[in-house]
Length: 264
Ligand SMILES: [Mg+2]
Image (cartoon, rainbow, N blue to C red; front, side, top):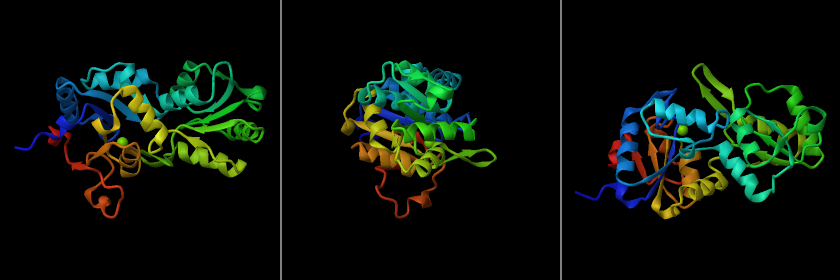
């Protein structure tokens, strides 16, 4: 028998939604796969573009599904955005206006940004935009004013929509696009499939790209992002992508599986 696919890698970057769980129901093959991979000494980091929830909340969710996990195992686009700002924009003590949820706010405070509201926010040095289910015209207005006045304009992730159980909701990418349209400025967007999040995730994991496998359920974020960062990629068909969606998509994933157990 050929060597198992897993033997080629030291590290795994694993997208969560559609891979480990679907609408918060665990996918049991994925849970078994992660346990087994860890037993074989693989380093694992769980990824999501969703910046709404905190790393503690995600870690608790995975633990409730039977996976050992602490905050260090979780890499959201909020963590990536904060890491990106820490590396590139000397955040300590700078004032930031945030459109986004607790997950994003908590990470931005971690790297030393001071989060401001009201009149102060109109003069913020950074405007950071993620998914905000309490979005208002006032928030868009304040963000717009600060960006016009020269603030750094950072987006957590480019997802234009959020697939809710009732249908499609606007995602972070749609909110970012609104401010881009209003200001004529382009945001620096950190999350998948952009190279920033992929490289920061690799740095967290501590494995080389050619020894790391990116596993996800979306071609245009997980597979494209992994490929851009020089990783092999695995598309798992437990989430939003069907086999026929692969038709004509470049780059091709290195593996396409119905269940992650196939990698063992
Ligand atoms: Mg997914």
